Amino acid sequence: MAHLARNAGHDFELSRIDHDLWNRASAKAAANDERLMSHAIATLFPEVRTMTPDQARREVLELRAPALGEISERIDALQAAVKTGAGGGLVTRELRGLREEKSALENDRQVGAILQRIDQAQKAGVTEFQVLPGRNGSAQDAVYAIGRAVTRATDLAEDLRAAHAAESGISGATSRFDRASHKLSGPERGADAQAGTRSSGPRIG
Image 1: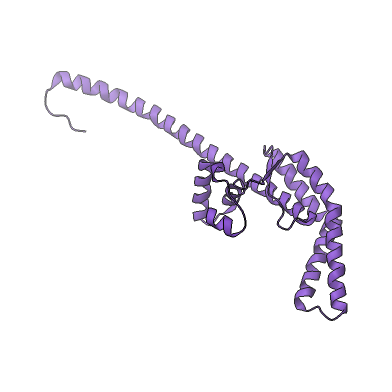
Image 2: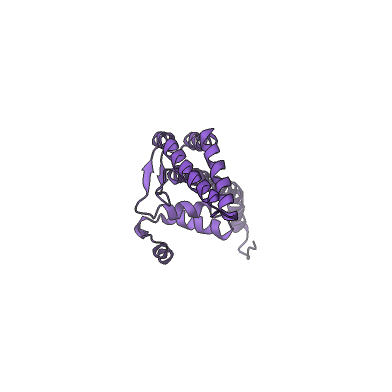
């Protein structure tokens, strides 16, 4: 993992590993569910920022205007390239994608979805998010970075709830088994003791 990180330009702090989380994430990843592993890996980045739900909401709203500006500038540049004949199929597809992203930010689809996820995470008991830096330093990607952090934190909360439920279920089943064993073994021990006074022969079972 550290080798892959270095090749991608990152330095992981392996001392940050939560061994219980890593083991659960590895087990889930082996079953093709990599959501928890993405959270486990994210915690290893030294540049990760811890953010409360209120901070996340505020930052998402503050980033919307600069993100729209970045997208608009990119759209203008691509349109200029198309006019000069430098555009092709790839440029046309990128333009279409950028226009969809701009529309999503303008009408609150994108920001609204992230804010809704923050609310859901907070209701689930999440008190902080581990936010990684954006991939290219843009405001647009910073918005997505917060959205990814919220998703990871929600997945982690669900995993912890499931783990606790499984532990309490095992504990409850064990205590029920112990009580049942005690009830069953009591009369047998009494019967064995009485049988021992009547006969010194071998006992079976």
